[in-house]
Image 1 (cartoon, rainbow, N blue to C red):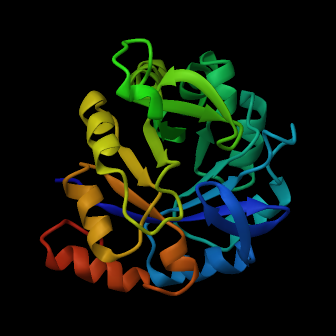
Image 2: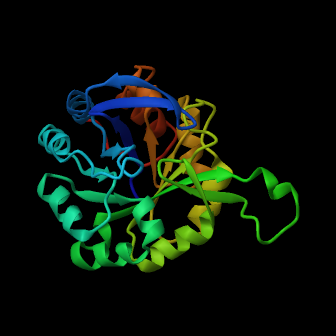
Image 3: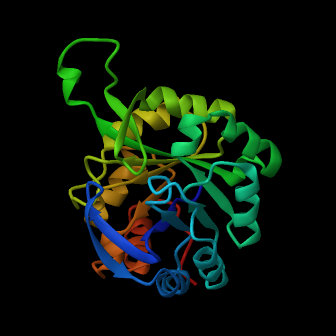
Amino acid sequence: MLTKRIIPCLDVRDGRVVKGTRFLNLKDAGDPVEMAAFYNNEGADELVFLDITASVEKRRAIVDVVEKTADAVFIPLTVGGGIDNVEFMQELLNAGADKISLNTAALKNPGLIREGAQQFGSQCIVVAIDARRNKQKSVPSDEIPQWEVYSYGGRTPTGRDVVEWAIEAERLGAGEILLTSMDADGTLDGYDTELLSVVTEAVEIPVIASGGAGNLDHLYEALTTGKAHAVLAASILHYGTYRIMDIKDYLASKGLPIRPVK
């Protein structure tokens, strides 16, 4: 069994880390460079840096902040936000990113996934999917997806089915899926394990669970019931509820393969 990864997420707006609930009511959580260095020293396996308003504001991720963040860590760094061509991917990789996260731009131009995978390798391309459960699904219809993909930082419904989009992303060359439940995000009530298990069973590539972690059991459930390969966490780490060591010790005690904190 592959080692399960613990990945802090830095959602960045205006150069600061923020955290909200269901993508709303964002509150300041700290400086991204300082937090990245802290999590690196705490024993995180990877780090995700998402410039969450770049696509909405029709601009690029903040390259200078990415560069400073990359300089502060020695673990893999995934960067996303307003990335719409391979030239900008190259710029971010040159700035210190190890992986590129695509979301809105890939939905508008799915061929971007293939271009990135061909130029940099599938292991470098992460497709982020923001998913919301469709309340209309109570009405029997094959045309209404159970979970719908949203773009532009969770602001715009696309009409696309989450599972179908995950399958297409894999076919186009994505190396990983970063799957966020918008319904669970920031609630601390647990990941949407039903959503996770449906997507993980549909694709062969690793799926990172995101949205809803509130306690250690939630992380365990995402990795077992949800069959996720990694768990993304923000609130429980940013506000000091748990440390990376707490999480790893707990999951290891439950028999999951975890990279120890050095």
